[in-house]
Length: 235
View 1: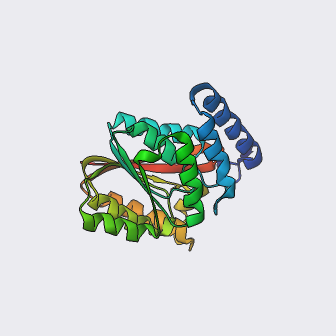
View 2: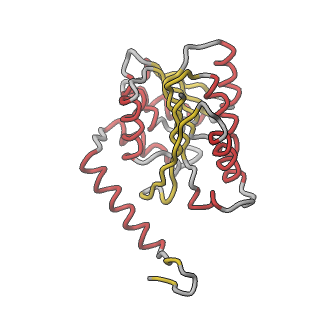
């Protein structure tokens, strides 16, 4: 249906959301190899402090594919939750690699550790509990080996701080992915007052102003609704 008075198409969000879910499920069924440990991890997210926040199966597969394409051996993740995306990263780097993942809540970390053990990847995944900014600072102070891929999917108001930490923990060629940046379109609403939206807008400005970063953003629709990711690469 078109609203000619406004000059812009009007979208029936209920119908669109159903169609988006159907398309996600079609491609996930056709292309995503989700085994029992992944299914268990995804379903266990219902017992976390954020039951609907885990990435969708096709998004998890995307993260794993990006990690493999980048030839990554070290991944840093801001936001573990139930460990669903962590499993995709861990399988992508393999037992010779390393995944460090930050989780604020011990309850979530316990669920994640069980899922990682079930998936057979716990031997090369380090789940660190506590505030992500503080955990990242400890890595910086320890002068750890640089990470090849960083996935930022934690509290959105802290996105700028997480990006700054990611830049200190990577070297040229590293890939940085920031999730949930579209916010159902709210990112275009200047001065919205929503701290999550402001965090996305601030980190977008920081990336745009950084001459050492190449970046783009991709909108997504599907099981997780209308959202998207920023994908950046250090020059």
